[in-house]
Length: 174
Image 1 (cartoon, one colour):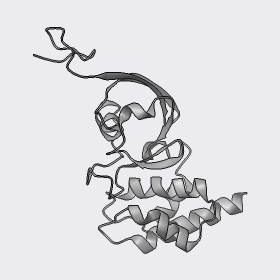
Image 2 (cartoon, rainbow, N blue to C red):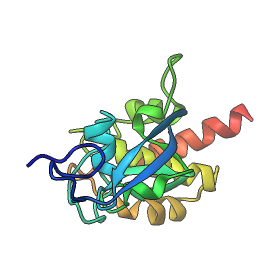
Image 3 (cartoon, rainbow, N blue to C red):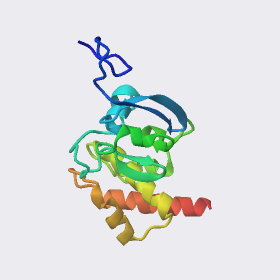
């Protein structure tokens, strides 16, 4: 028996508990029904087709799936999708604009803050969260804040340089 979008099987028996969700994702309102056990990562990647957010450890320890929810970085692999109801979500696709890259993205490119690139979306989203909280972070704040993001290529120095540079650029722009 198949499950229809209402969460009922063909016999009409409820098989999945669903919740209605209305949220803003990258500045665009989205409404839909989500299963209570669906994680935000799956909603973003499979249903909304925003595939920049990466799946890796699936246990909220590597940072590859980081997105911002109300400006705070969260691990979307361990965050239930229904929890975004009434909230704002920003993914890597929502950073920058049609006019060009965000200064943080430009700094990552300039400083080679990514090699294989797999962790880069999560790194950028965590760094955006830091810069929202502390526009001119210290080196210690950068190290502490970014400690939840693993880079298997070892680009930590270039990532920290990129964050400092983006911070300096935003300070100069006023």
